[in-house]
Image (cartoon, rainbow, N blue to C red):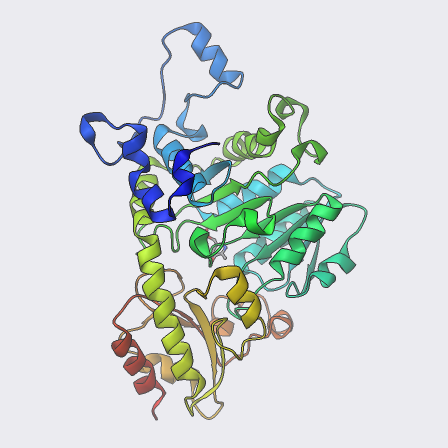
Length: 414
Ligand SMILES: *Cc1c(COP(=O)(O)O)cnc(C)c1O
């Protein structure tokens, strides 16, 4: 996709995307199309859409509203195309089930979102092998490669431990072995990281987090950076091996993913995600500053045993994070409370930060990770992921910094 607005900054591009593409009456937003079907002028146009021409037919396969959101997300990631889904998990499920088959092998990071870990369990039942390794060192992925390895999967900053994957070297590894490199960049967003700078083939975002922001819509996206040679990927079905090879991967994900699983993003949340994207960089800038201030305060607090935040010099991948994310470190941190303090009591004393499982909201959210989102995983896997019972995960919001710091220091007083 060539577009002169690529020379502009991310926020400028998002703000003016709809208007520049033309909206009726000088509107600054594209309208919301809630129609579930689209009629054709003549039989030729009808058959053409079914045979691969761009257009809309039945809204499960997308609407003008989702198409405009996709265009915006493609601009944000400086990429070549996108497909949106009803949630981040739907995007991941569509990607893996349409691009993998029984007998294939995936090498993935062991420090991944709990629900993605659960999805890997489902893939194993369907005959896909999945090996989990410590992705902070690309050599661990290299050592796990097999003849049937098709795909590498990592998250940019891991949740809740905030480990930063060896993103550049994994990109080189993927290139050397012609492997599909899938990166879940939900915690970094296109503002901290552009997938094509690390040679990612596909980038996934949960739009429910920072991009929509404000905990007001669910959505997910798969973005094709244009870095991958789809002609080398055996699992593209003959029907989709037509036309420009650069489109093959996304076409298969879109056609099969939306058709077979039906997790289509509705027009209304698509529109709200589009609005949220306009302020994403502003919200993130403030959230990243707050997270840094909170991490620094917690690190020297007598009630705290350790803090994990990539912005701290004590973080094992601090330098890597600085190089990759341009001096911003995201809004997620976790800390371990000293054993003499009761983790649940501390949480109960918070007055501003709320107890909730989401992340990337404008409000600060906390939870005891081992007892909640990682409970079902069991103690052995938790130990492997370094999630202790006293670990609190914090998604830092955009509250006034002093209020936030005071809330946490009050809660830690005993
Ligand atoms: C939340 C999240 C997802 C799943 O997104 P949903 O929109 O909640 O389905 C996937 N990956 C990461 C890293 C997430 O934080």
